[in-house]
Length: 377
Image (tube, rainbow, N blue to C red; front, side, top):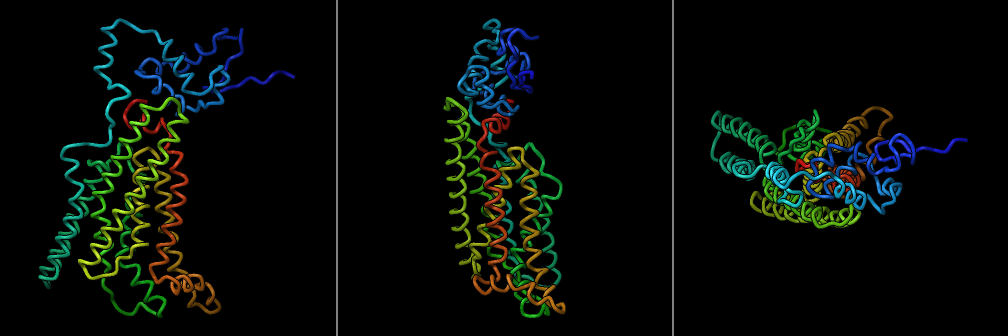
């Protein structure tokens, strides 16, 4: 039986084969573009990780991990004259440079705009009526949508990777659920809906105002990850350093959001909906980070799942009115009896947040994700 020969980008060629007795040189030829443009060993390590080379692969090359292999590859890259090296560094920022965390300048000024517009609309509506009120509401909502779109395109929450198709629709449905979901579910459980109900504006206002701490947390996470990327001596060290940073940043955002929920509820004399709106805010932040770091499909799937769970709960209530289907709505009724109508969307968002966090923790902890975001891979 013939011996097994590893294949793939990180495979070690057999000595005496086509590539000779220098497998590292063969690997350098395979990843020539990565080695030629690297300005730091960790850049090569991040690039190798993105291309599927693991610590186990590195041990085939007699190195303890990917970083040690990258150090040898970086040391063996042919260097040109000092002048050529200087030209390279002027065209490309060093790997330890300041992080690229989004567009600065005017883009950052867009972040508070949606919250300010929403607050202005809510303050002006009680003083208008009839056609002026309808015109104010229509114009305000259009301006709010445009400002939110600009904020997510050009500010610190902007992304070079476009969101997956349908993402915007799912976000709008979730926000509509915050505004009208509690009233609709309450009336559906009581046999309705048979009359209109007022929107729950306090949590929606808090979520729009939370764009500011969300942008700051996203920038802090990117900056901290880049710092740890420059200081780490191996990819494992980077993973161990960046995961607590991600969790801490996420918890910090939730604390800021819950503070805003309390303030908006007190200002508008409404219930804060803290658990539901807090879980939705956490879901939206995680989804945005996933989009920024190249996982737009996972973000869309999470948002779609949250929408689907809430729709399924509402559909179960209406289905229970059919003959013989009374038990279909039993879980929804038990949940609302335990925690109110807000418990249904809260549970849906919490489950989705935990799933997306489990998916995003390894993705956002990869060195290659942060190197690619800075335009280095």
